[in-house]
Image 1 (cartoon, rainbow, N blue to C red):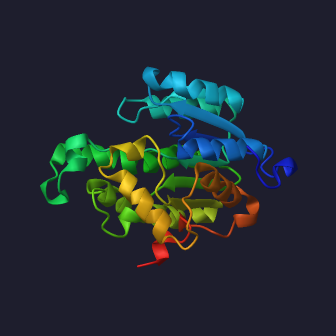
Image 2: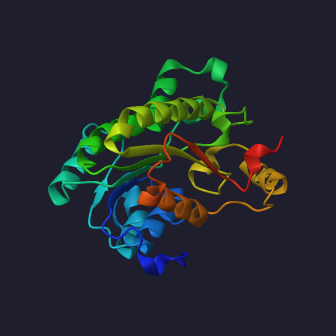
Length: 261
C-alpha cells in the first residue's frame, strides 16, 4: 500500500487491536494496512477456523505480533484477547471495531416484526460488543488513545433493505457519543466511522446491494465510491495525536453522499 507520508512512520510506537478482518476486501484490512504503513503495531483477530485461512496471510503481511480468534458469541473469547494484549504489551493506543451481525431472517424482515432473539443477537454483536471492548481497553490506554467503530448512513436515514441493522447502528452511534463523554477526561477519543457503500463480504448479505453501489457513485458529489484504503487513511489520521481534540463524532467517508438529498 502506498500511503501519503508513510515514510514518516507517524504512528511509530503505537499499539492497537483491529477486530473484523475477514479477507482483503474488509474495511478492517484497509485500516490495518494503513496503520502498519505508518509504523504502528497491529494485533489482529479472526472469527473462527473457517475464516483463519483468509486472515492469517494478511496478519503475516503486516507482521501482527498477536493473532487470536474472536467471536463475540463465544463466551470469554474477547476477555482472552485482552488478557493476551495485557501480557504481551501491557498497554494499548487504539482499538478498531469493525464487526456487525444480524440473523438472516431478522435482517430480511421488517423492523416491526423483529423477533426478540434476533434483535438481541443483532444488538449484542453490532453494538454491545464495542462497548465491551471499550471497557476492556480503557485500563490499557494509560496515556490516552482512540477507539473506532464502523457505522453506516442507514443509522440516520431509512435505507431500503438495511432494516434491523439500521436500528443497531443508530444505537452504536449514540453509544459512541456517551463513551466519548465518559472517556474524554482520560484522553481517550471515541468515533463512529461511516463509510459509503463498500463491496465487502458483510454487505453481500444486504439485498439489492449492487444497485445501492450504483446509486452512491451517481449521487455522491465526488462521483466516486469509497475504498477500504480511503477509510484506513482517515482512521489513521484520527488516531494520531494531531487529532487529539476531535472526539465523539460520526465521521463520514463517502465522497459527500450523505449531504445530498
